[in-house]
Figure (cartoon, helix red, strand yellow):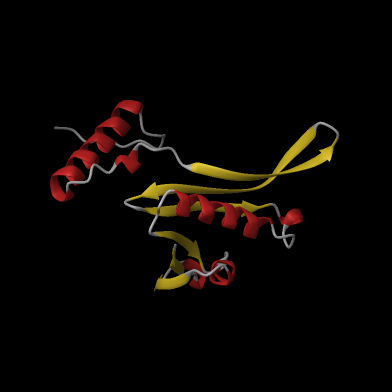
Length: 146
């Protein structure tokens, strides 16, 4: 046996090996196939029309099903477009989507200097904070029941 490492994205064959193995193990352990592993994330995007027929993406939110819940993976709004309610609108759309898909809750991880207050304002509760990262940063784990 040999072990190698790469700093490039997984090859399709290795990704398939991992996902198939995780699904099989999940099915064996819980009776649930874990189909979420292959489901693509859903993005909600905010576009601004700068000029006629010219659009610019100014923000996006990415959410993915995960074992009966939804993982909010990414949320970003360009600095020039913050304070206009774009993030809140993106979040409300994503929460509505997760409810429609019968998710039990939405969870997110964020660093202490990012959007902890925003998530709290949107009704998320902090479940856990991990301290000890460089520059005094902490990692916050938050959840919102649907």
